[in-house]
Image (cartoon, rainbow, N blue to C red; front, side, top):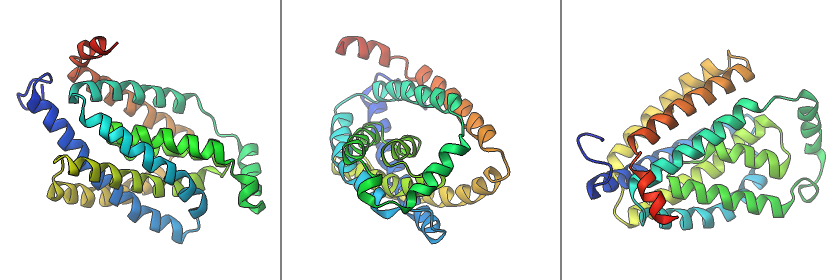
Length: 243
């Protein structure tokens, strides 16, 4: 229960959808602001970001439309599975300096040679759908998607991902706003907190080894996922009805 509201009630579902629409706007705007900071440092590949984002917008709208038709408990319960899957992938992944050097040297190649459009379009569409359905910016999905589909190095993938994260967040919030699920004032407050938190977090993260930081992040994701699934365990019943 959240604030005394049962997860199976219509009120809980409304609160969940309102939260998705409101936070998506804050995440989107915050990503745009941070993408500009990364762009000034030369860590944003605009062409790759745009090509990845365009099909993602289509998937985002479809995902958000399907999401608003479903109960909040089921959405959050399924989101828990997605979080755990991503956390496990992050925990198992390793940094390979040899691959990093190869990726960095590929920057001298033409866009046509570096980008396989079928992979980019597919990855963008799937990540966009997940972003719209779960109401997330999708950063922890966009970065792997860019690495897989474009071959750019990790640092540029992070900076470039903010183009997609910002767009997906704004599109998701606009879709939910159309259905009446958004609070702009709260979203702006989240935005201020996100900017301040991002500044502090980036300074802390820069002092930690990449592998250590990745594992800490994976553990946090799993803890939050388990807690979210526990609060929305009624979603199991709803899921069995759909199967």
